[in-house]
Amino acid sequence: MEIDMKEEVNNFIMVCFTIVISSCYCYVTTKLVRKGIIRFLLFFPVLYLLYNLPLYLKALIFNVPIAFFVIWLTPFKLLQLVFDTGPLSDPSLSFLHFVIISCFPIKIHQKPTSPKKPNGPNHTLTINIPFLKHYAIKGFIFLFLTILGYFKHIVPQMLKSFLICIYCYLALEISLVVFAVIARILLGIDTDHPFDHPYLSTSFQDFWGRRWNRVASSCLKSTIFYPILDRASRILGRKWAAVVALVVTFVVSDVMHEIIFYYMDRVRFGWGLPTLFIFQGICVVIESTIKKKIKAKWRLPQRVIGPLIFVFNVISFMWLILPELLEHRVDDRVLGEYVALAEYIRTWAYWAWNGPTLCK
Image 1 (cartoon, one colour):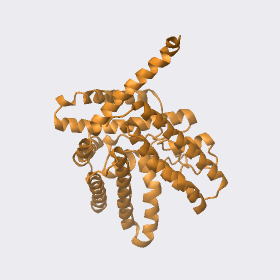
Image 2 (image 1 turned 30 degrees about the vertical axis):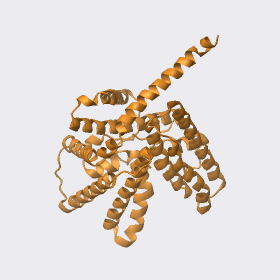
Image 3 (image 1 turned 135 degrees about the horizontal axis):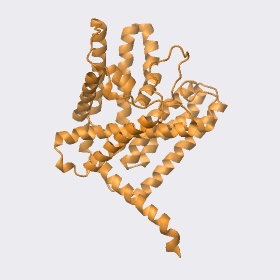
Image 4 (image 1 turned 120 degrees about the horizontal axis):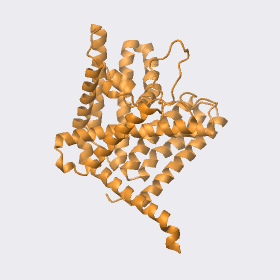
């Protein structure tokens, strides 16, 4: 698929501008209309618009991030706002705070209510020397894998597939961290780390619930898991309600991923995604059940079990989803788009620097 990068950049700018304008509309609506059905009806055109915006982008390097941020996170935040819940419900939020929190894929750090009983370890994103070193290393690995992609014909197939999975993980984490840092600088607010060392997980529950993509996880917990858990507990009891809520959460996550994948090629992918999420959901339920039954105090060290769980999930992705992505030549398209974008930037920079001289 040939892409006119100049046109694509212009479309991307217009899409971002539309998102900001939509957020402004929601901010004003929130100030004028009380929570409830009327506010939802006024938000509905925005939700419909957001789900159509990725269709205006063909390049995956623009399409996929917009699909993830706008199709998944922003609508969920707005739906929470309909009932005055979620990160946008604070009436003291300024206009700039509202727009950035609604548009950016960030998780605002919730300070513990009591300083004497802190809510676990501090996961606030702090820009310091260890932070910079950590992401400099990950950035170097990401750059190395990107360059290696242009010479992938010399890499064995199994190793290549594994490295693509690692590349996808690094791309997601680095992009989310960049947005978190920008939000912290612009707003001066504490944002959580989007990832919490998923390769050090102590269990599948720990991996999916507290370490992997904590931005999306927080969104799913607040809008799907906890509401279903509270309502189902009245009928099924806490034990089975937790299972139902967990299954529904994985199903919703699968649906959102399928929508994002659809925007890649405007076609429905195969059964890899639902198989992966059903499989992972079963693993979490089985693990939780076994832990409650045996109540074992002994467990493998974190530095052993963490990499095992991480590699297990990477291999699951590699076997169930990656073949479908490669079938649609996603890897080749992304590498080609990097080249086209670099050429566009080089041309734009050349004319920006030499334009006045050329006009003389």
